[in-house]
Image (cartoon, rainbow, N blue to C red; front, side):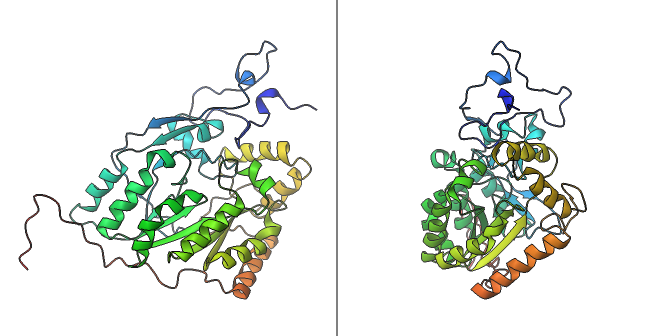
Length: 361
C-alpha cells in the first residue's frame, strides 16, 4: 500500500508529519484531497524559521531523582538536528506547535541568555552547583554557528568560574575548545558527546542534521587532546535497530579519548510514540513490529513507562541484558561509570563590575 503524500519522508528532516500538539482544541489531520492543497502539498524541503524566545529567566530547575543535576540552561527550544527519537519533541506542544516537523523547523532562540545568566549568578544567596548545558535540546545545533548564544553563555560561566556540563552531538563544540580548555584546568567543565550509531546510512535518516558518527568521534578526540574531560553517551539504544553497536561505539569512543561512558534506552513519551512508529514504518518497515515489541517488553508491556529510575533503562530480560553488556564493555575498556574528578564549585566568584564596593583587603 502506498504511503499518503503527507507522510512521505521530508528530505533532511526526521519527522514526516506535523500532527497537532496535545494541548490544542482542534486537531489537524493530513490528507490528500486530490487538488494539491493542504499539508500533502508541502514541498519536499521544509525551511527552518528562527524566532526570538523572550524568556525572562534562563536557569531551569528540576528535582527529578534520576537526573544528575538540579539546574540547566537550554539556549534553544526545538532542535534542527531532527533526531526522530528525541524525547524533547513533546515539549514543543507547550508552544502550541507540533512535536513533529514544527519541532525541527520552528526554532526559538534566547538572545538575552548570557545577560540573564550573569544577572541570576549575581543574585544574593545564589548557591553554585554545576549547570547542565543542553539538557533538553542541543546547545550546538546549526543556528548556534551564526547566533553564538551558547558561546556567550560559556564566556559568562568562565568569568564567574562556574562549573558546567555539556551534552551534544555536534562537532561545532570544537569552536569553543579555547574556553572549555581554560575551564577544564580549574575543573570547571565536562563534555559528553552523544553517539547513537556508527552506521552513517542509519544516522542520515534517524538524525538527519546532526554531525556524522565519524565527526563525533573526531570531536571526542579534539576535546580530549585539549585536556577537556570527555565522555560518551551511547544513546538511545533502540532494540533490534542500533543496540548491536553498543560495544563498538564504546570501543571507538574510548580509543578517541573518552573516559566516562553512559547509555539510555529509547524513550517514547507522549506524541513521540506515534512519530517514531511512523518513522519505523517508513524507514525500517521489516523491523517495525519487532522493535516496538522489544521496547514494550522493557516497559511492562507498554511503549513507555515514565516512572523515575526506570524510564532511562527499562526493566525485564532485554533491559537487564543491555545493562549487563554495557557494564562488561566498560570494565573491559577501562571506562569510569562517572567522573572520578568532580567539578569544583568552590571556585565560584562573581567578577567585579562597575559600581562594586572595593574590597577592604
